[in-house]
Image 1 (cartoon, rainbow, N blue to C red):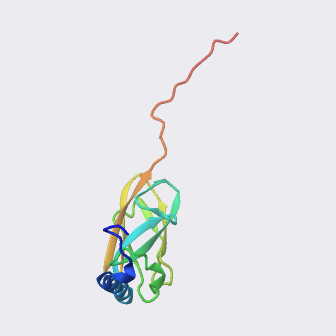
Image 2: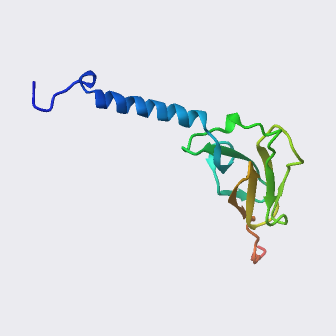
Image 3: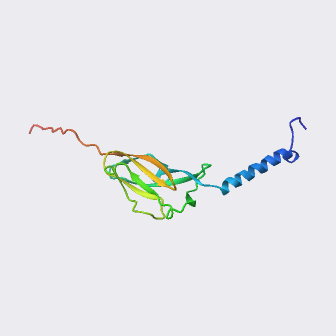
Length: 149
């Protein structure tokens, strides 16, 4: 046996620390609470998002606890509806019509420019940019004439 060789069962202090660690993890799990949320566009892609004018995407939120663990599936969105707000409704529209059990909102790009989408739920808020790309507009036309033969 080397000088630094020991076994966990031979060290009561190490065993006690492991028990404290296990107890702490259990206590955190029992006291989980929503701490922050994040807007996602199109499923798993986090914001911001770039849309061509006319394109749609689905915005949803993900809720995290104080340890950064996802707890979205634990939230009753019918009892805790999300409030969706666009700062520039001339550029984008959103389809939320009121409280429901979904945590999603369909966003439609209406015109070129940048807008911000804000989601609020459970006293928490997140804001993400929506970059709307307008189609290229021709700025000039060139007409070529050929000489008749």
